[in-house]
Length: 140
Image (cartoon, rainbow, N blue to C red):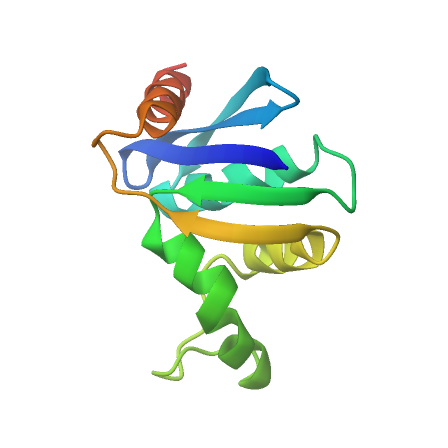
C-alpha cells in the first residue's frame, strides 16, 4: 500500500501557488513539489495528487490523504453528477478547473485509491509536513 499526502497553497488567490506531495512506499519517503504563478489554491490542491499519481506505478493500491474537502468530495462524489450534467454544477454553472478534474478522474481509474480527508494544521505529522513544503513552493 502506497500512502500519499498532498497539499496546495497560494499567496493571494489568485496568486503565486505551490503544491506538494509526500509519497510513502516500502518504508521510503519521497517529497515532490512545484510552483506556478497566477494560480488558485484549488488548482494547487488538485495538481498535488495528479503529480503524485504520475510518480507511482499504475495499478498500485493507494491511500491519498488531503486536507481539501474540495478535492476529496469533488473526486469521490460531485464528479459523477458533473459528468452527467455536461460539466455543470447543481447551480448550472460551469465546473471550475475542469481540465484538472478530468485529468485527475482519468488518472484515478489507473489505481485502486482510497481517498481520505484529514484536518489541516492538526496532529497529522505528514499533513503538517506537506503543508509546509507547499507553502515554501508558493514562495518561489
